[in-house]
Every structure is written in structure tokens, then in C-alpha cells.
Image: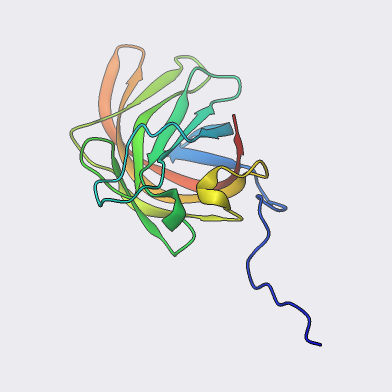
Length: 171
């Protein structure tokens, strides 16, 4: 009698070396954590798929920022690197809202420049049931985003590197 063979990866984020997505610009670093997801169908796929889209919310611990995403086809997140885009323009991983702040004097605030689409990719590991498994999953992002930076009275536009792997748990 042959034993059953299951090549599917385990559900859940597993053990992560780091559990955060970090946005950096020069000496400024903003960390995002507490990622939670819900099958809210906020950005349904336009390809005729019946998969429910996944909305991901996060927070900036100790700050006022967040990085919120919408995934039209969460079932495809484990099939290799997926493109990152804006919610209106598209992409496999869509940035809906992205803000952050730094400490110091003066502290700086960052807000996504919606006139410049972000570039990069992301993927998931341990994702089961199109992202609705109670075990959650790990999300990895590697992107560049254009943001408006305000430091006191000074306002400019900067490119922010968005990198890391984080656990995403259901709401």
C-alpha cells in the first residue's frame, strides 16, 4: 500500500526572520506591521474569476501610518512574483492607501503620490483557501513608490523603497 503524498506547502506564515514591511528613504525608515486580511471583495478581478478579492490592512506601530492593499486574485499570489500597482490602475497587488510618519524634529510625513504608479512585485507563501485560511500567510513585497514628503514647511517628492516579509492574519 502506498502512502498518500501531499506536495502542498503548509498553511500559514511559518517562521519569519523579520515580520514587517519597511519603507526607507535615505535615513528615514518606517515600519509597518499588524497586517490583517479580509475577503471583502473590494477590488474584484476583471477576468471573470469568481475568486473573492482580499483586502489587507496594516498599521505603523508607534506612528500614524498604514499600508493598505487589495488583491483581486489572491489565489495567484503563490504562483511567482506578482506586479504591484495602484488601486485604480491595476496590478496583481494594488496599493489602496500608503502613509507614514517619522519621529524627530521636525518629523516627516509621507503620503503616496497617486500620479506615479508604484513598481515592483510581491508574492505569498503558506497561503491557503485564497487567503481566507485561519492560519494566515506570509506576504513578501519589493517595490518602489513615489511619495510626497513633508518635513516641517519643506515639501518634496521622493522615492521610497518598500521591502520585507510579514505575516498576514485574518481579521
